[in-house]
Length: 420
Image 1 (cartoon, rainbow, N blue to C red):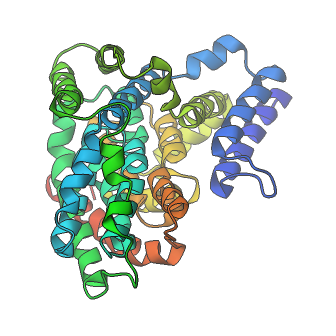
Image 2 (cartoon, rainbow, N blue to C red):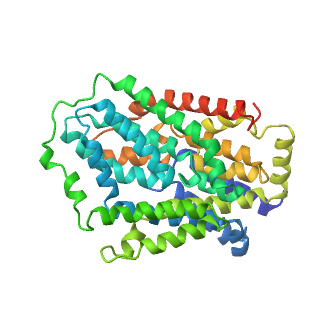
Image 3 (cartoon, rainbow, N blue to C red):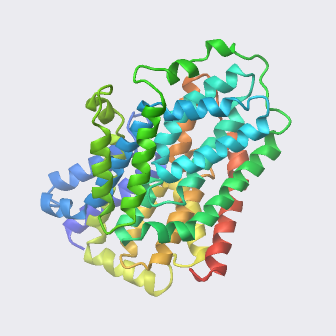
């Protein structure tokens, strides 16, 4: 193997070890920095030319993700999230109904928008309103995180890995939802059932904050203004976007058009929208595209991948896909796992891609570190004074994940979409 090949392969291995570690011990760097730094080293050392690196990027996936982040920001600026949270808070005296509302809200919004932003927007609102009504936020935050992951699995725009899979495989939006929707609904029902069983006798906290002190209502009447004319704008835009997804227009162009139109405002500065963009996530995507593409482009790695496929060691059935997703999504993360598997299976059939989207997303509910959404909810809750521990999450995440993935596997296998 040539020295250049060794250099590319070494950076590839180090990058994915960094994905597993989540960063570099002792340094304040994360997975996105690792992927970006590996790309810089590939270019600086002459292991990839700028043209070769650019060829590995999936511009459609990156643009679609960017556009959906901007559209999701409009829901926040218009007060939709705060208004929906205010409606849920009316059921504060009936925690079981409130729990169901959180599951449905998190699941539905995450099927239409990027789940990371949904979780980021709703977590502080839920914390304030629940504490103000004497309720322990933890079961409801668990429901939010788990339902955001579960609901997002039903849609090609629900989460970053589904966006990537849809763009890479040219999947039809509604055909995907037809297959993935029922298992996603089952996962939402499982989420509700598990959390209700575990928390049904301990909804309350020792001391509640006065309702008038919670900033929920202040947020709802915030600087950007909230009213029917405000929150109907993003809802109508989303309906138009779904309609455009039914046409032959590339999804990224449709989403960019809607995002650009939504940014026209007399109240919100366009730079405020840009501040809502998760550049870290875009950097992670771009870096992984380049590093993985460079490694899989090596003749030696291509030959190894062909051998793995020949002997059936690349997961292509229900059991193999579920096992690989469960392990890899909780070791290196579901986005790095999907990027890697797509590279190993460049001509994967559409049913396999649907299965990959479902399994890799549902597997992220196993542990607190299993998906970005889980970490967003935990960190945002911590800033509100609510501790959502690793044990709290695992206690609900294990049964929800195993039951959800089991239901998805049965659906895909019995429906004839994937072999066992």
